[in-house]
Structure formats: structure tokens, C-alpha cells
Image (cartoon, rainbow, N blue to C red; front, side, top):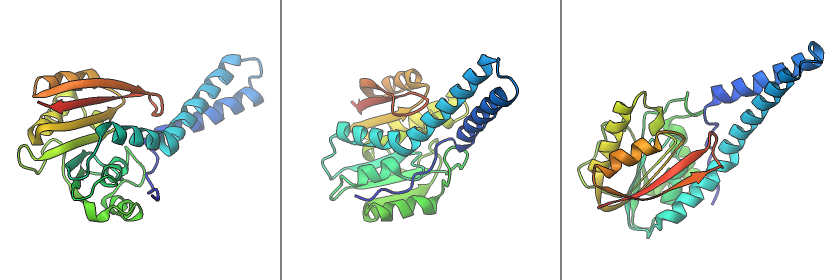
Length: 229
């Protein structure tokens, strides 16, 4: 399967780290040859920036395959990707479907991922050969445009933490719980707030199966796997 183009996560932060690393290293070499702490912080910034690039270019593909494997998709599921972005996980789910369908919802923030927009998402679906199994909707995850108990599988990747506070994150999680069928399999990959997600989901009909750490995403992330009871 051909890979779509999924952009650079948090591009402004990556550029900031790389730029700071280069400038600090040059300052040490040119002006402060005895100030080893400047070189240390310069190298640290370069390492973090490089790790973030690895995360975007390689790591998130590894996590996609891991999540898809754990979901044990049979092919006929109606699925949802919450905050689908450019469609990395959306297309991963779609590639395993036969008669099923996967919906993606997003409001496409370029701050969170470079080149993030509806047209790019659909272009990636065409590249990966999943367009016929995908429907993408411009919608806020706090107000999902679906009826209750609709989905067999729900996924979300590096999206819910972008909401500004826990009240807003809770609204998104309650919407996920609302549209999940009994027996719905859920996987949420994120860099923060996983314990908060676990508590909200546990109190709203989900059995938490396990939480898995990942070093392929930077900042280091976790995946929470759950099933609607």
C-alpha cells in the first residue's frame, strides 16, 4: 500500500527546537568556547527536534500498525476517527475494511499538523486506495454528527489533548461514549491526559483493557484500549 503524506506534527515547535539548537551550538563555537552548558542545551534542542521529526516521519507509522493490529478488525465494522487530521489512522483502519466504512471528523488546525486540511485528507485516501471506504466530515469532536450507539470501532490519535482544558476534553469523551455501540472497541493515542481519559471512559460505560506506552512518538505517548460494555 502506498503511503499518503501526513505532514509534520507541531511544526512550529519542531522549527523552534532545531533553530534554537543550531543557534546555541554556533554561539558556543564562535563566542563562548568555554561555556559547556550552552553546547549542552544546543545539543539537547537538536536531539528533541530530531526526535520529533522521527516521530512524524517514522514513529507514527509504527504506531498506526500497532494500533490496527490490536483492534483485530474483521472488515465489516462501521468506524470513526476522532480528530482524523490528514488521515493516517483513518486510512489504516480503512485498509482493513471490506464491507465496512470509516468516518473521519476534524476541524483541521495547521498549528497542530502542517498541511492539515480536508483536501489533503481525501488526497491521502486516494493515494492509499481507501477513498471508497472513507467519509470525512468537518465537525467538532465535542459535537459529533452521529446518532447514539453507531460505531463498532473508534480511534483517535494525538487529537484530544489539543482541546484547551479538561472540561472540553470531557465533552469529547462523552460524545465518543454516546456514539459507541455496545462492544465498540476504542483506541486513543495521546501524549497527555491518559489517566483523565481512563477515568471518564470508565465512568461512562467502557471497560479499560490496558494502557500501552510508546517511545515512537515524541513527546512519549500512551495508547488506551477500551471496550464499551
